[in-house]
Length: 499
Ligand code: ME8
Image (cartoon, rainbow, N blue to C red; front, top):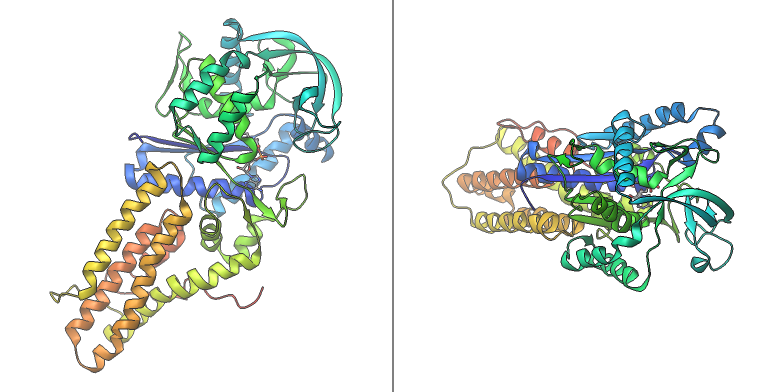
């Protein structure tokens, strides 16, 4: 990766409050942004998130609750921002698709594509899924229901604008074949490529008649139409970070994005529509699109439409911010589906956080309190046998973290955390083995001092390695093991006995 790092999340629909699935993507993106800031410097990383505010779903939700769409979205967006603040999501910019900067930019894109004959008017007759806002051809259907959400389809006939998606199919196949990092994980790459090789793309309908749907960005060349919500929303990734010059050439300090982090539900739009839209505008495609898996409740995806959502705020109130962040990043390899349950969080919290990490810190602080009246002993000349092994481990973890979170494009948070825990457990084992309390009894004061010092340095390093994943915990450890004198507080992670 270059010296710049630009990462994005999907823009979430504001028709309902954010749930665990949304928080998952933002926590993962936050972890990567924080990690890359450590690596490249704060000024070289840009982390964008935001909200998707147009379209049928939003208009319907607003009407049902008795608001105008604009008032409704203004109220809903607060819930997203509050959640991100609570979860320590360190985004650099938050874009709403109703903002002037975005609306203008989308109209400029439409204007360029229209002038270049990449958009044309045609009559459409066929099946339409209102909740998904998607057109389906007869061939794609098994029955009269939407292949995605399984709800009944409507038969519609209307005049709309179409984007010449089909023109670029061969280009996209070539691009994917020559850029193995373009779609991740590997099995998603294979899935998209074989889809493109086995199907002919249809041109994409990018407008909706105003009389059917008023809540959208007006087409600059037709008073009767607004922009299809997906076409509008995808453009945020460039509207937020750049502009077109007078020769319609896009200029940006950040583009191309290094990673578009998304859930697997929106891979088609990101891996097919989006690169083709960019190509038609003569803009480079993003480097990587990473589609993660779904959090499930039992057999079902957690989603607003299934009505089985769990509130992230509730989980954070119960278990703490960092236990929640840790669980999501640690419990399943990034890319696969996972089962969300409170039992699973408690299990991780009690074993990895309370027993392993919390205990290591607490024991060390207690020894410093007891043996040195709370003052951290200075380094000694005494060669501690374990020091070398710990040093080597720290070095290998730093290298592996870089591979997991950056160069491999796999964003393997769980393996990264597993590695850090090897160090935590190594330090815990040394305490058992060394029995510092015996060193004191035997008056081996220099050995004791060297050993305690080794623990302090190791814990400080662990805090540093953890800071992208669990920023609050890293800070708490650094506070407790401050410069000279410790500040022993409550245990970092109290055990939870029952839920
Ligand atoms: O699709 N597990 O918005 P959306 C994991 N506005 N992640 C989940 C999830 C689950 N059960 N449910 C949702 C949209 N997500 C469009 C995007 S982008 C230009 C426009 C996450 O509110 C995941 O990141 O339906 C998924 O891709 C996203 O929320 C969909 O959010």
